[in-house]
Image (cartoon, rainbow, N blue to C red; front, side, top):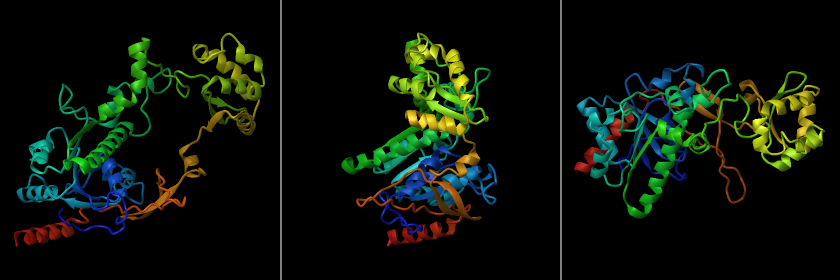
Length: 396
């Protein structure tokens, strides 16, 4: 492996010692490489002179982009022009010493620049490559540009999201995130398999494939049930009651009935009308879904006489699952929200959510040890110098 500079807080982590080269931008590839960095891998992020364009999506985090801060901690930034012969040669030599190479450039761009994943793996047999695209690399859509909302629309996600009057976008970049998660899973599997085979392999994921997988239930409803779920806003298309209900003070509570035992308890202890449970319009879930409008009227008639706290008290007593319909401001103050502080070029960022807990054999939660968010090209000189030194020592 080519030795390059980096942070020292990764020594005891599971991917410590792995070198990841990521020719990346936006969300999907940075998501995968960020999680690899969190696990101890040394991630060198290749950027253009102007930087990853996600750096300029917004400037809300002390002048930094929320997207970039979220997904680029713990990486080293190396500015390269891969069309430049010397920079291309440097990147090839870095890949020669790498364990993983990730790229999510525009369709065909990496191959045209001389970084075809199959060719790289044939030359470096332990290398794992991961190509992330919008629609895959074959077929009619292969050359199309793909962004999150476009793929939400193409996969039918938008058609089942929103209220009855119009489709809607899911409020976060779920197609990008799904692709990044699948890339991370594939890379982890390939690293594990390499332990026994000694050989790397290629991984290809796309935004479309990732979201098509998440759309499996609606797709199966279409294929086998004859129709896809309809848009039902904050209700659930195939479970009832499951949705948002309003208290007399205007607060909304989302409740979920997952089985008939909960349905009986809900009718007895929340609605305080046990006879409703056995009504011919409501006595099992599929019937309740068909008669959702009538059922909601029954529930609203009760809930609109209660305050939010009275609703919560009844739902807790009945052991019925529920949640409050919060705003993002409520999330910011939520008692379950776990945060980690990271450093960025513009200072500390205190509001980063921490999604995974690791617990040792004594039951102690290990603290997050995430690296800093790099400035554009922050590590370019260091990496170039280390590469030259490595090259010279190899020649001796």
